[in-house]
Length: 347
Image 1 (tube, one colour):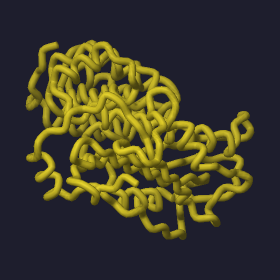
Image 2 (cartoon, one colour):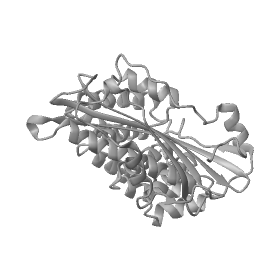
Image 3 (cartoon, helix red, strand yellow):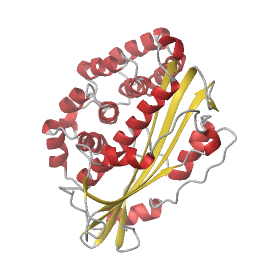
Image 4 (tube, rainbow, N blue to C red):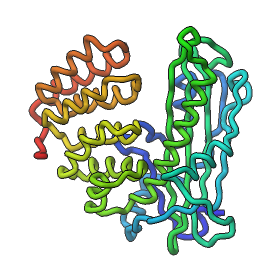
């Protein structure tokens, strides 16, 4: 088994990474799900955490950089169904082991290694899923939301170190039986999506963490690996790589929603103020994925140009979802308070 205690350990996490929709430490992740109404009246202990605290993170940052991995071998996979039995939707079962294995060994994920292999990675994943109606967990409903959350911790041997990676993913989908969408079908889709996204994120972290600026830019320009693009977009934003702007604009239209959302968030971190950026963000507010709408609206607020504010005003007045209208109003207020403080970045 690959554990952080076997060798020198370095840990990476999505915690605190702006642009990630899923940066909560493990215990906060479970609390957040309960707060959202996923597990009303239930208590569930979070899996043990191996992510570092702030002091450990500083020590890790000062350690010798770890070179990005070129291949991924998974020698152990432990899947946990963390949904309390009395909260599981009626008539819905999920084989968590099979779900994670299917996602892990799909294209863009991991290769399966032998359990006694010297080098490789071990993954532990904890899945929670639920139906909600009026933001309360229910076992059966004709109209509501299907929600799923998946927390994963990956430990990989690399040389004389065990490197730990962590990500958590949440997704929801509305359904209405009268419109041909059932809770069971919606749950199947959201569970598949969080499994796929978690694997892609972790694979991308392993392959991109430690990459230099040149590799980040090259990945955004010419790579099609979803996980690597997810991580490269965040790295470009955090490192303020202005030359990535053109490729980030392109990736706001990427078919994988996480690549799209992280590219948008990176443009916000760059304070990229061109009209092409604004138009790409506005395009993200079309379609059924409200998470993309949310990220796009917040990024328009970060950019704060006259064109961005004009679109924000339109969204604040006319978006069909009240929650998005409210976020747009808040983004407008934030932009008006900080107007003139943003620094332009040339494309």
